[in-house]
Length: 179
Picture 1 (cartoon, rainbow, N blue to C red):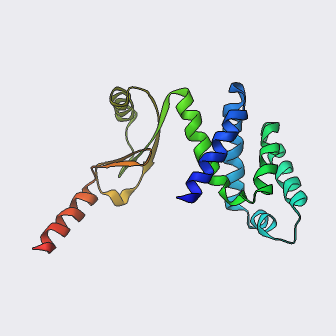
Picture 2 (picture 1 turned 90 degrees about the vertical axis):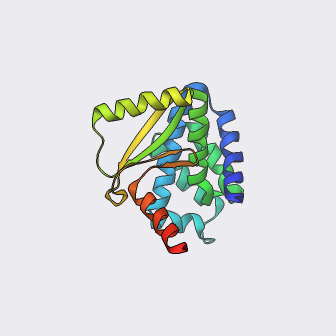
Picture 3 (picture 1 turned 90 degrees about the horizontal axis):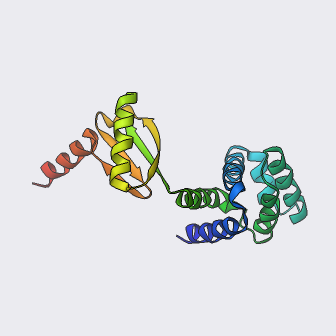
């Protein structure tokens, strides 16, 4: 809870500083930095170790952000994040920033999971139905998870709509074992 509140506060601050034309580049840059932190044990070590000074940490992240093609504002933002010892929140900050960017564009990110791949026609039908229901443009991401057996899981923000056979079977099992 605290991590989300801190991430939201930092994302809003950065969002307020970024020009409208640089929002998407900033979004991609933050996501790339967060991914680099998740995948690189060496980077995690440098950022977490007290053996490295704040200036060292700032230089490492500034160099990395420059190589990733991030806008210059990110280097200044990262310096502040390092100074306040909030580098561990970078992934959450990137998620919150992406949410703010989607809000401004009027799009809603939606994750759809199914047991087997959906045909392009099914994807288009689902996209248009979600646009009608949500009354805004949607950015759909499709996942295939065979463990679902059949049906769909649709995640819109923190809300999950689950019509999968696996979930229904689990609910039936619970109901049957109660009696």
